[in-house]
Length: 147
Image (cartoon, rainbow, N blue to C red):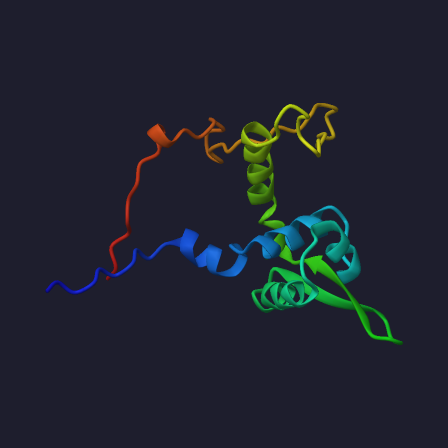
């Protein structure tokens, strides 16, 4: 009998271990939208309180969010994005675009973002070096060899 195959070492899988649960990404979305307090996040996401508490703890432990106290009595906290959390913005935008294109229905998207240039923001992935829009057919794959 063959031994089970080892799963592929993958940055996508590593990332999903931290932010791949629905309430985690919705918490990050809320902070991007300016809702930094726990009760605001509960109202905006509909997450169960204990679940959101656990997800926020995971995001803080992973260095994505930072907890800052804003009240002493009782102790209350706001959540702010770290540099690593800010780097998730393209992920949130890409998920938003996909949902707008494939799930919005006849009412259209529930949220529209405008860029500072005055046009509607429609995110796309482009190559940082040449600026071309990325197409999977034009992407070469290589796996670094370990020494």
